Image (cartoon, rainbow, N blue to C red):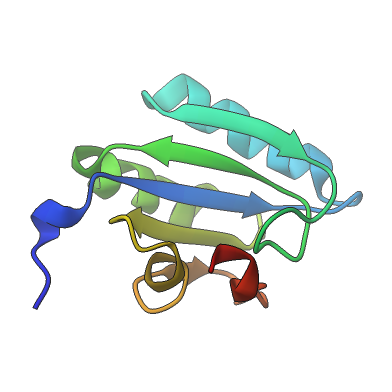
Length: 112
């Protein structure tokens, strides 16, 4: 069994396309104004394991109970991957992840 103390943080990956870019910007603004999170760069093309354009939001374990419920209520129909940071990128993005919206395909080989 793993201990939750192994979780050093969380990432939320907010996926978007041309049609949903404005919604993604509103979600980003809401995250930045309501929480102490680290907003990553906009990636307008797939990068790493991500098969769609996205930006990443990093937050601490103590913020999970506030950030994730906010995303559940305010995701504006966007697909979002939330995963822990334990040092095991493959497991964090697969076995230990949760999805809001549609579960998208990931290129896990890029994490190995």
